[in-house]
Length: 331
Image 1 (cartoon, rainbow, N blue to C red):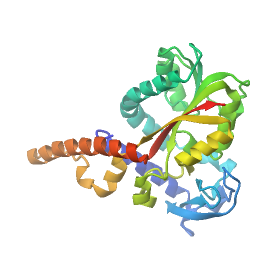
Image 2 (cartoon, one colour):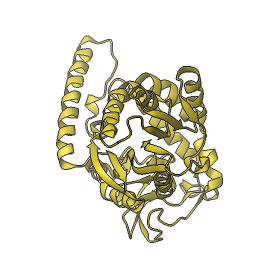
Image 3 (cartoon, rainbow, N blue to C red):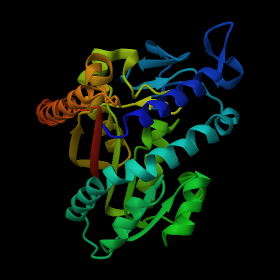
Image 4 (tube, rainbow, N blue to C red):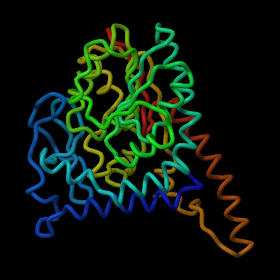
């Protein structure tokens, strides 16, 4: 993250600009023609209270179950327009995903494959990666003996896979594709749930296409973390219009249980840079031709690394990570 800091800041700026382009200047909120009031996607309650307002979008907390979601939320007609923003998508793909994100993801994906292997009986398991991006995880899974395929809607990713990675990928929504019952041993959803208007429906479909004792593995955001408590609306993962909802470990366990799963492992990842952006700006890298400034920058990099590793260890113990990784088995 440190070496790509400026690129990430530009990406977040573009996301913010996209959100602001959807705002009605008269109200300061997202244009009424794009959204509608909804019931809680988890429990159906219409009782809620405002949690934060960010870039004209309102995140609310359900008064019944504690789920956090954007309300009012996009209409089905508006979703296509909102999510097909080439400026944001292409920048992330070219400037971040290929040169930086995949580099950082590779060792983590190797670890996740190892964890999944512990819970799968089939020696040649069939795996579906929902929202497979440019196919890195699929490639790693294939190399480890999985019969892997993916779903991805972004055409830039699809073209990249077609030209660079011999993988089976379809440009369809999971709910629309109609896989037969018990088709897969494993389904993965890395950084997917927070983008979905109805995450329970998606997990229900995952349960249907998984075999008995099949594994679902996912990562998503956790609003019960310490960073959210400290930062509130400044918490990075309140990211409209991309992030439509947020979870807690308890909510994830409850939601997965409702869909027929038992959680077998849950891990926390604390994102130190989220707090550093606000409270430790002196650690932010700055290019300079001044020898003294360059020396200070090197010291900052060391401090940044020390803070990152130390805080990760502490918040793992406290179970308060911004990101959670969950492995669950179908009952």
